[in-house]
Length: 375
Image 1 (cartoon, rainbow, N blue to C red):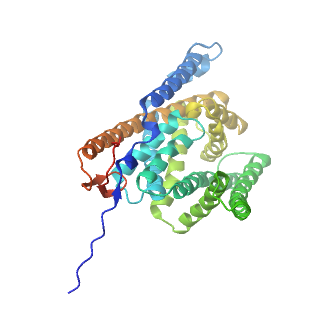
Image 2 (cartoon, rainbow, N blue to C red; image 1 turned 135 degrees about the vertical axis):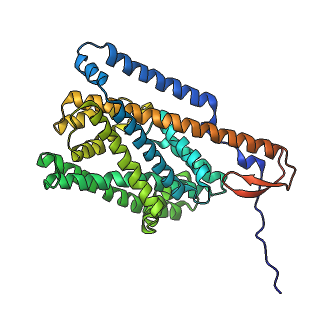
Image 3 (cartoon, rainbow, N blue to C red; image 1 turned 90 degrees about the vertical axis):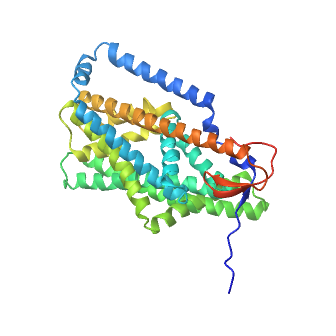
């Protein structure tokens, strides 16, 4: 009778199990103070600046039920983000741990500039903790960014086409339908071309120098990240696909709820196309995107015929929800994750060489000898 072979328990060093840099309290505190300062300036301008009486009157008449509905929609968008995060970064993690890390990412995105790149550091940390090589981390980070951007581009083409064909309520000139479609198609072609170009440049650099330089690694991450995103889409993973759609759709509907909170609402197609174009202001490196996103959204709405007062009130309410819902839930997830890591560090500190325990991101592992403690 053959003996059943058991899979050996992987061994790690305590040095491999530290937390990410984003867990540094001074780093987080400085970001929060900067964000709070910017928010305070915006509130003072809206409250005290002359010539904004109509805006203040409109804001004072907000319907709390619609604002609450917007907050719920934003939370659902966050849950969709968690689903995408888990599908791309950490399928073997529990949903509870994926929620902690994914929601903490959203909280980080609220206070770190450059379009959410700061939050991706937590996903990279989760992979690193799971023993994934650095090349795979870079590849999946690129894939994650591309996958979460894809619904925006696809929706822009679809909504602009529907508006141009007068298939949905809403009016837009020929230029305001053709230009977004052309830009979105160019973005798709440029992404695919970038992947191929990066791969060609990587091969040429390797043949010329024969070493894995930083440039080669960056080019490899770009090329393989594009390929990885395409492979993930071909798997037709329902968790990934539904997460991608929900992450965008629920967020757009937050803006729709905010328009309802203040009165007349533009056609849904106009809300969608203005959102998809206006959110590009978030690429400006300002904490929370404050200023860039707001001006981008209001300006795009006005371009598509929405009165500036209605657009400004709805956008300000949307931006408040988009900042504070992730901050609250992401902050709670961050604290929970930090507490879990602290408890894990305490358990590891009590372990001797070759002791086994459950480690976040790796499952059951054997602790190797080390002079340093994790956490």
